[in-house]
Length: 255
Image (cartoon, rainbow, N blue to C red; front, side, top):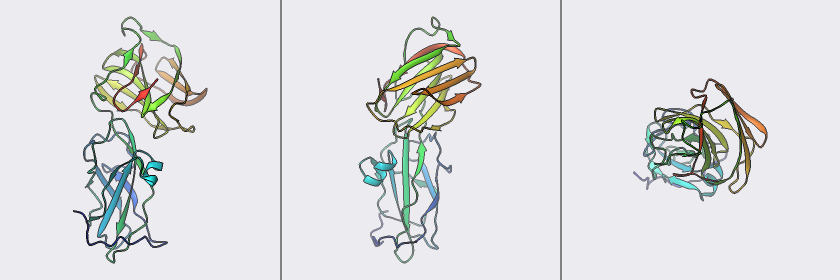
């Protein structure tokens, strides 16, 4: 319910802001599966919360400027600070988002905005209804203990490479998330994706810029280099040989 009776009072200096933002009761998760209405929550810092406002954007600059904002709840009259459903357009799979919240107290005074918090969405079972484009049949290209060097650029969303593929449902998938400036290695086992970790990048990924990628596969250990800098070492991967493919589709465009 939109709060028509809550004054749009500017936040007073020094007033406490909401803290401990959560999505699906987790702090900055990277694999939110509910793309339609994930549950949001925060710790209120006022004695009596009477309203809130939530904003969600594709990235932190977009949150502040409003240019990349995907949802603004407006002022909602409510005491709820847990299990608050996201109510914007459906989120994209395999993407990163930034959000913030502010609240009003019983006297109608607004808090400052919370510090921005991030969350990522899971890839989902069909990964945007697209599959990698393989360089050859997995059975024919059973590469093992190899080094791959390539150059990629991002034109939308991110860039992804799939490798050590045993087939269309079993492979490793390394994803560079352009909007979040992070590296997210995944594994796909029997058609189901799992995020192994997320690694913040020191370099800010820019659209239309070429980046050098090197992947060294040594048995069950994979080392990943970006522009000749080691950014990650992943061990005990489930697939140690196979073919390689690139993915373009869904919310991603890379070349």
